[in-house]
Length: 128
Image (cartoon, rainbow, N blue to C red; front, side):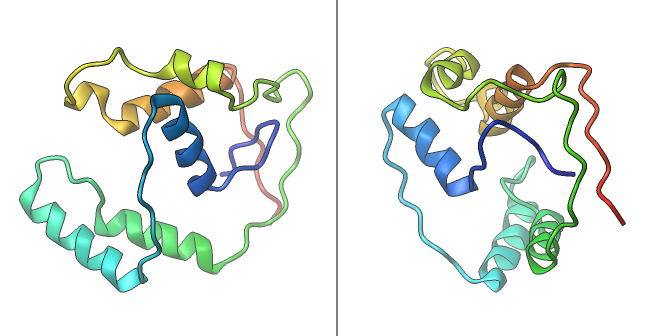
């Protein structure tokens, strides 16, 4: 299911944009898929809530291997007009403090996405 917005961003660009707002400089580098499978397998065994799972890696690799089908555009009243800019990123960030499960990156991502899309938005289905 595609997430539609006023601009197209790669994950790398989104991470860099959020990092700039919070004053961080993430160190990112590409790793082969086998490494991600190994990492997922390992953290599933040592963490209560794993950072990444083998199933997530599998979904990402399957999604990257096959191009997505064209999708219908959302009606204009449901289309997001809010840019993924610094002001809206700041609104979605938790209050500064020590890291905890409640302030995980996933909670931040859900908050940002929720704030940028209407709560009753229904995403269109892709053509088969």
